[in-house]
Length: 116
Image (tube, rainbow, N blue to C red):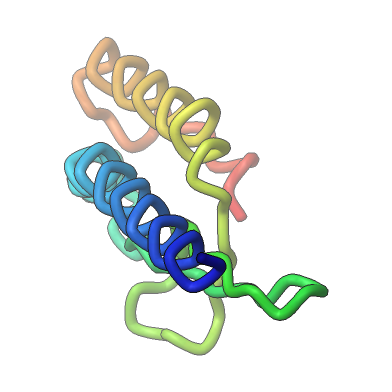
């Protein structure tokens, strides 16, 4: 019975990961395009699946977003939880794009002070 419950939990977890990836991959692609268009072509985002082991020994997998400040340097990166990326980063980068669009993508008008 316990093995059957564990299998059902695994299936549910995989379904959730699949659903999260289906939602986040197009958004990451859009953000990477925006970064190139607004003069931040070195910044790169990609989805990753993070695996954690709980205190009871069960494994929990979740979707995260890895961000590289320099796409050519894979050593330096940060991880953003899926929901933080969707709720905060994605919206802020879209706002940045709208501001750049209003200024005809003039790099001299960009505010790079919040980078990093």
